[in-house]
Image (cartoon, rainbow, N blue to C red; front, side, top):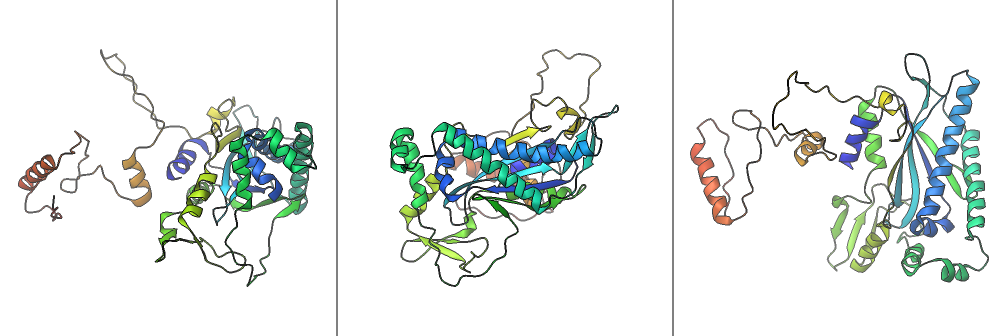
Length: 365
């Protein structure tokens, strides 16, 4: 989660306004979306294209030449109670890039109205209905569909819909929803981050890339069951659910996506094949270019993943590569795994310390 958000903020998302669109499909489609990647891919494609069409239509009415949009789609497969429920969180650049002589220029679009959101829901519903009917997924006999078109693994995913939420039906609390719905497809687009709000942009990326639960939410009760504290109380006011160990592990297994299914997808100007992507994404820091070649010099390969030390420094403000004594930079020189070698290494470190060094914990090895 932290690494994905850092990558998006540092290397992908430009410093422009950002809006989150959330698409929740109807309950009847959740099992099919969980096991059939082609169905999920179609829903992502239909929703993102519908958003882009609304933005580009507004831009052409304003006289903007060749407007282009960009978005990053996160596929979340879970609810707060760890039930399987594939839905989309789409971070859309809240505007368009207009083609001009000196390069692409970003123009913000007005906020979508309820009519715009209803149009998005209607578009996705009509296209998904047509696609499902053409692919043979819409039948009156659901058992025939299960036997004819689903593998044993896919039928196992579909059985996740029968898993109870463990929420009590009592104490119903009336919660007003700002989402617009059509045919079971619900669209929400009230969350927006303004231009220049780097912290807000990273927090939104963290929210979209979050895992199903945090470790602090789990507790083992006295009778051996797992207690999961909800991030926010449910609509009935309940703040936690209790699962048996088998129920908990079964829900985790259902949340694992099938093979070859990307959970983060890029579209528009943020896609890797976009011709204007290089002019839009944040530029990397300039590197030194030597005027003369050096023999046997290894070319520097850009790392795709962030180091653990940099993640600790970014998330917890802990710089593990800085020496507490002199403030210099540290580098790994080897791995010590044997107990006797650990004692020798710590002994040398203690002998080299001076009186001004901070105290260290005595380790019993």
